[in-house]
Image 1 (tube, rainbow, N blue to C red):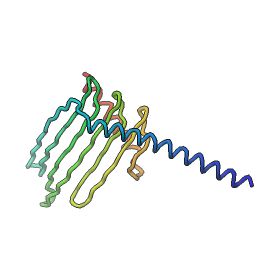
Image 2: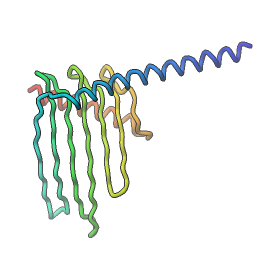
Image 3: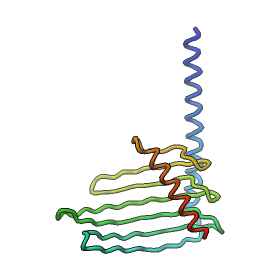
Image 4: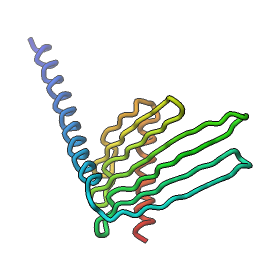
Length: 159
């Protein structure tokens, strides 16, 4: 009789932990949706890199949304055309950082190459990775890298 009770308690603990994580990610998604629908001050810039000697042409669109002195959203959207061994490859990538009170809360990434599309979401809480959709042995590394990139960006913006 004690064994089933142990498994029931274990199940309840795991379920409760998952539901808390889901609740936090849902709260973050509400904030992200609000940021996307907002009329925050928006700044845009474009970077064009044309390096025919390397078979590379790239156009990057940068977008920042700011409220007072707080960064809310930073998006890096890039179209890349590379020629390797006579073959042309078109790649579209996007990395979007979302902030609440100057703290990273979410990063949305995607990459499209031909008919392949990869979409990854990274959630953060208290300056630590909370949850991510990438199923890979390198997912934790990527989550940490994105967090350090965000910290460096915030430091540059505050200067």
